[in-house]
Image 1 (cartoon, rainbow, N blue to C red):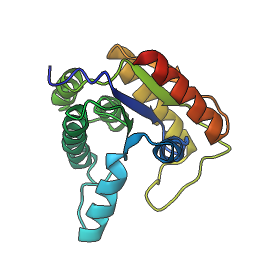
Image 2: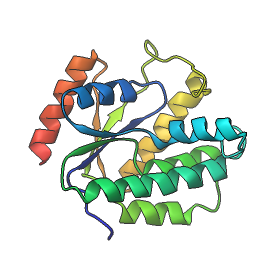
Image 3: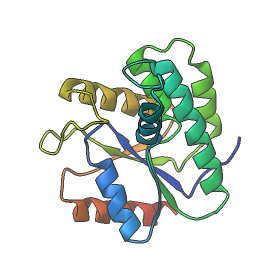
Length: 184
């Protein structure tokens, strides 16, 4: 086992479900937060004309996300402080299923080694707030399917899924804080 990660919490779900907005509010409230790897990789790959993108080479994109997620896990686990992650290593197990990556055993091994708090916060699909942007190209049905694949992966890995309420950001943050206080 690399790190048990009891103080590391994952906020995950499909695209456009309010994860990033919630984590921005958490950062303003004083929590250490870790941004989603995928968006950073997209920006960098597009800047260099690279092909490690969801819609071009999803396997290469997944490998870059895995590497970055493992590094982020190690860096924040070493602090011993509470940190909130916009997605975690286990998300990639679901992503591999979503896009049909067959050579994915190492993603499962990584998810078994790079552990987070067993309580994982799951942002359900929320049509009222879902929007496309330059980095989020998935349509609504793919967003829902992504949510399902990720939720299934975390459940299979033994995490306890805590569904975030479809509520204003302040209410979601209060829910998150209450659950973290119980968990640590």
